[in-house]
Length: 123
Image 1 (tube, rainbow, N blue to C red):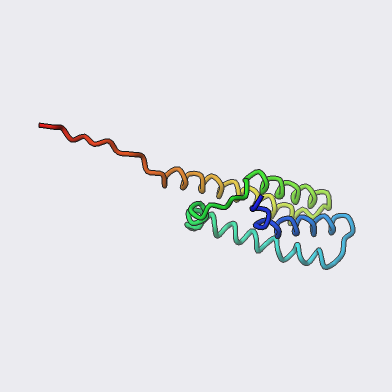
Image 2 (cartoon, rainbow, N blue to C red):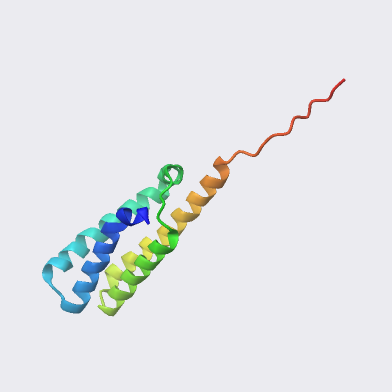
């Protein structure tokens, strides 16, 4: 459960989206409007560059299911709130996260070197 400290911001953003959907304060609107494109830009940068390899080597302990749960909740909440453009942004964030996850998995498996057997023949 040490990974919880790594996802506090994700949980807080989901809380802000929930507050905006059900009560609609202006501050929550602006937090979502600023945070969503920043996260989208971060995901695009990570997936398109070699940062997925760095992330794979660093080894985040957060389970992948947690991110799927958070992104699904954010997407559903924004759809309920009828904020279609931002919901679309979160759908793209979710897809990019899946792509990043698959890249990280391939980097992890490719970084494990198989043992080589010696083919020396004794003569």
